[in-house]
Image (cartoon, one colour):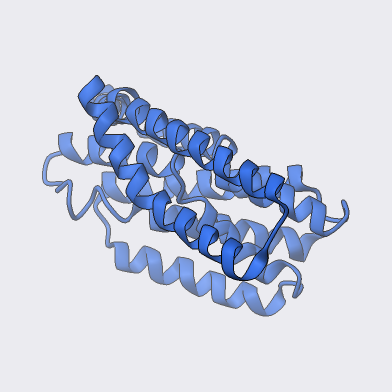
Length: 230
């Protein structure tokens, strides 16, 4: 456990350290923000590093193995609806808990001064991703081409963009980006890998990946539809 924590701490440091160095350089040469604010930044950076390291350890020892186990067990139950239901539930639950999605929802609410409900955006994104997670897992089960699914999904997205209010188009694409965060991504990928590993004729590489990209399109389409309907 200690060895794993050390490895993750080093990984997080490699990612966060350049940001800290850059902000420090800007602070000294250009920005000159209040000292109290800069100290808060340093404290926050330390807490971020520790928190992410512990978080990634939790993913490594618990979330990922369990997600893979759930995915591997579902096909054995012989119920296609059960697979779709679990995929939908996990997609929805992980998106609602995704920190990036929560930040986006809060920023939307603040920037629009409540005109666009952040809570509504959060659940619309989660619902869209959950629907497409189930659809993408159905592709793994039945083995139809990911190219066809992506063509239809992206085609729908492009068409909807012409009818979506201007305020919602950039929001929709940001919604697709934030769904691929530290909570949803590992769970969804582990689920797909587990399912593809036990179904005869399926490859964990060709069938286990791509699911997250498809699911993200669901979030984009859902926010576009929210804009059109509202």
